[in-house]
Image (cartoon, rainbow, N blue to C red; front, top):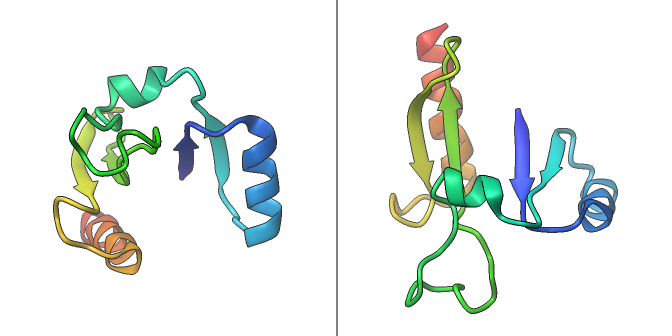
Length: 94
């Protein structure tokens, strides 16, 4: 599992330490991955002006292809429900 954000490496490191975040984080400060994976918000979307990416996760299969996308806001999930939906799909595929 990898987490990606637009934050700097230093900000991510502080977040991981402060929150006890156990997963690897990747800094996408130039938004290359955000653009490629459709995580950048569009003008008019909530949080666009703040530059905050969409909360979206991707389940990637063994072949390296996206199996399913999980978009917190568009699916009406909270963060806990978001994680549970992903884990349920991983368990079902195992």
